[in-house]
Length: 100
Image (cartoon, rainbow, N blue to C red; front, side, top):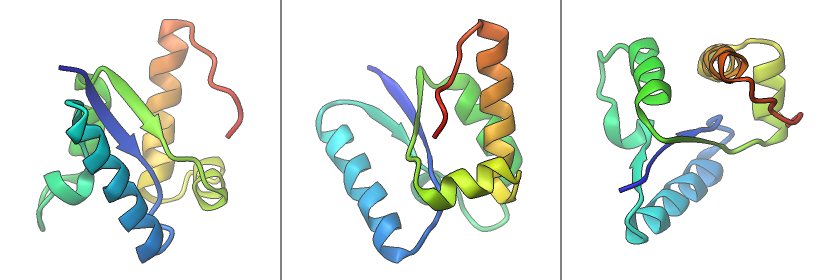
């Protein structure tokens, strides 16, 4: 089974629902989805979850919105942290990520 970690910004409730709906569709197609809304509980270590999810899944699916790009570029919040991990991982593999 293919495993995917979804990286996205919590732009608003509609966007979070869109990401959840996409995740459900992927699950229906037999894709394992690591999604913070499903896998994190209050008190969990967010940074550890992000690091593990990026490292242990087959793919990272980035839902790039203008707000995601802004947070990633400015290294703000979870998106900024995930962006650093993703860029470092792709650099080590010799992969170039196009601009969001």
